[in-house]
Length: 166
Ligand code: HEC
Image (tube, rainbow, N blue to C red; front, side, top):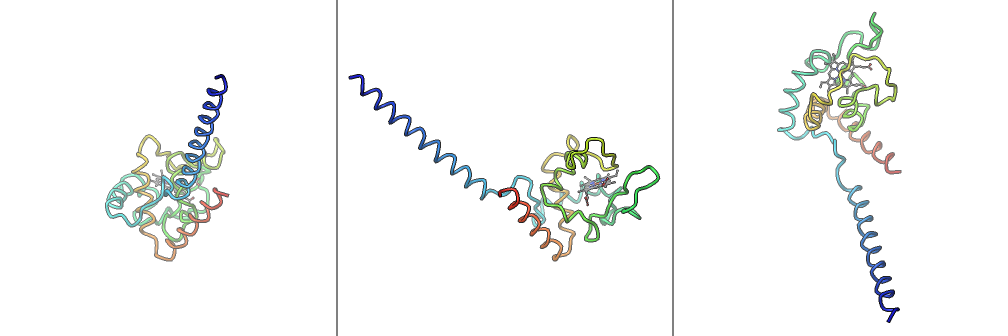
């Protein structure tokens, strides 16, 4: 019978579509549930130990041992560059969601603001620090914030992720 292979073929195609559909929906559900890849972990003591060491080695020279930043950090210096801003509650590091802090540190500000010619003293750490090390140092920075600022930063993360999924 010539009809049989056709029916079988149609049934096979249907089965394939069902499997693909189920896969698609479970993937979407997974995206909603899984924590975003570069989420900071300010409550993980092991992450914080690594982060503290990296901060002291890589960031403190500019951003200050306590995250206090450089003097007059809002004003450009004679070289036209901005001084390093504080990372503590008085700065605006905490205004950025995790993903942006990660991108600033790994890829640099110029790429984040999409202005390749932007001149800044802030180094690019991709190739210097691993992704885990970048998460660790940013987690340490977050762990220094007072509880109220940490809570507001958590809110900023939630809003940012909602804006992406819309
Ligand atoms: C050579 C000095 C220098 C070093 C070292 C340095 N930074 Fe920066 N950083 C800057 C400057 C300057 C800016 C402000 C850049 C601008 O806006 O032009 C900045 C900005 C930032 C910002 C954005 C803050 C905001 O409020 O928008 C983050 C996040 C940051 N740095 C993280 C780090 C981390 C993490 C390290 C260590 C791994 C580090 N920086 C090391 C100079 C430095």
